Length: 189
Image (cartoon, rainbow, N blue to C red; front, side, top):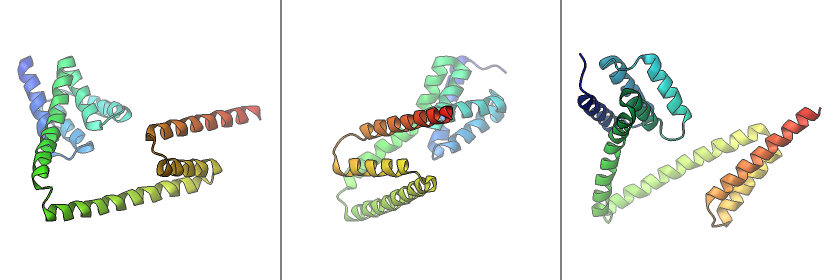
């Protein structure tokens, strides 16, 4: 049974909005989209969905949004891409707007303040864990180049009040120069 273009757009919006509202993002949304669009509606083959998931993963940005845009585009062109994008981002946007309004109303509450301080401690522990893992990866390479970049990045970030963008550009250029020099060294042998 063929459905109208308008009804298909509504189903695209409703389905992506419902999935986005009921999952916590990332691969959970993609798996739910696969279930709906491949199995329930039979609009895509599983192979097509896997291809879109691969493209979405390789593209910059959140995988859930990338996948929904690709699926929407495949099913209804530019309008379908826009509708699925709107369906995917609307629930988190609405939820965060409501949370912000209520947070501003209760921010002065002492218990909320304690909770937020506890959250900061959790985030600090998480950041420390990530930093240690990154350091361990650098230590495995046993290269003075990586140690030097790590020290430069730390000093830059701790002592200077400049955008982190410049540090990222510096590190990218340093990495490119290292690769070029290593390539020339290998070709010279």
